Length: 129
Image (cartoon, rainbow, N blue to C red; front, side):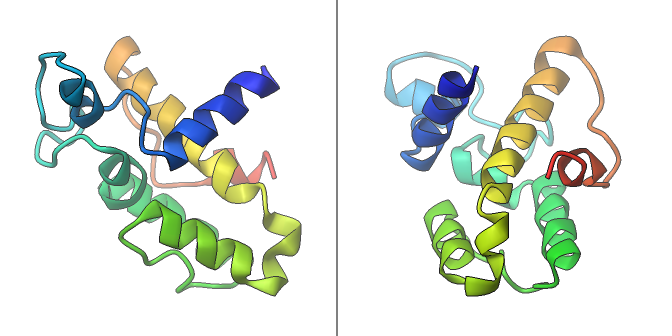
């Protein structure tokens, strides 16, 4: 299981997870829009950074660790770099990866199982850490 998560995280950072923008570059057909909000184009940055649910999750995590302005970037690479370059966060290195994994699982649960997104609470992530 750990290997599967590591592979997923690596693919996420490389922007190669199966979002609609990636699948269409590989000649798959389907909607370009986000299946959750129906407004934005589904891409890695939309799902993990710009989607309203993801924005709130990152804000909650930043407040929880005491750095409210840490994850305010438009690119995931910038956010991860800022996180790892902040010395006080050395004990929280795993948090962004758990967060990305959790956001991906919640997105897929909504789409494939028809569930609603949990409320804007990050207790499901904080409890893991």
